[in-house]
Length: 432
Ligand SMILES: Cc1cc2nc3c(=O)[nH]c(=O)nc-3n(C[C@H](O)[C@H](O)[C@H](O)COP(=O)(O)OP(=O)(O)OC[C@H]3O[C@@H](n4cnc5c(N)ncnc54)[C@H](O)[C@@H]3O)c2cc1C
Image (cartoon, rainbow, N blue to C red; front, side, top):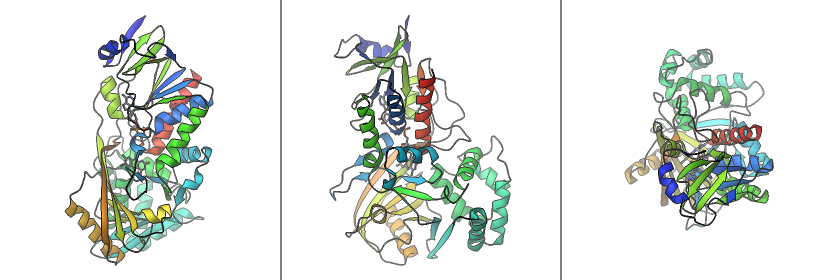
């Protein structure tokens, strides 16, 4: 029996009849469509288990949303600066297995530093082990008063309703406004890349539960080099070592089913296997297979080379703004001036030069030091992360879904979620 799979089947059939090199001849145990983190994790797990895999990636480079860009300064820049949370269990295990633990730097202690533009105050909220929960509550009490300690307790014991938004949930828990605006809101925006009324309370509750489980999970970390070097290349090398094939500039245009196998059609030919791991973004998934377009949110990373002393902490949030300032020089151990900073603006499209100047001014205010900017380079990703979605149409038989947006109550669209999607997809095929 043969039949079309996916909306693009009719178009893809044309390519199937071109008879290009490799058409109908390249057979694998699994084809992985998409060479971002989820796809590479799935490919490695499968290749490790002895499966013959092929990764088909549309872009000229692997990495997807973790891609890097060369810069005239000689520094390889991530198109989006990524933070790592201590709660990223599966991701950190992956990093360890790749022997790349040394490429992740961590805060000295579990601290979130939030600056107050205009008031030049830096609030440090955080705690060490042992007695982490008690110390965290005390640090909140010091920053926001005794009521804040009680509201943390109330929050933990106010179960979110299934349909309510984070804003509704926090209102029910009667969080005092300073604690909301100076701690929970910036934290929420950084973790979920969305506003409080856009996210399901169940997702935020899951983040808080996982992030504040202990001093080990409640800390933030960063990559000490470009993510491409720390993660993507090591993964690709291991896949290749296990005999996996990786093809870039190879966009999958559609699929067809033939004698129990699925054919993936590209301009370079067709690849076939009994299983296909779909590891594209939720947007590309909807384009290939239909269904509602998922809601995405932007992130902008503005790199600045500036004459300025080191930031008070490697990560400094600015209360009342969508911006987190990162001291990239400190994170990467770059000692030569000028200092490289990055302003990461969650849920924010490309800013105007005036907006960037205002962010710099606010940081100068918090740092109480003049910041002279020498050069700026901006990366803006319109679809940086996808909001949780209650459901998406299932994929046809033979396809394994590593492309869906997170469900409400799951952790959000992060490198941890991508790792979990990739590993779950590989396990599903190995068990089949
Ligand atoms: C600017 C920015 C900042 C971020 N910050 C953080 C952070 O601080 N912490 C965090 O945890 N997460 C962060 N994220 C989110 C994180 O990057 C993503 O969750 C993760 O990289 C998603 O990986 P993925 O493999 O699922 O998807 P993607 O990276 O989107 O990979 C999908 C791949 O599929 C390919 N593809 C699409 N269509 C086809 C096709 N038809 N044929 C073949 N290939 C195709 C694409 O080219 C792409 O390479 C950030 C993202 C951005 C953009």
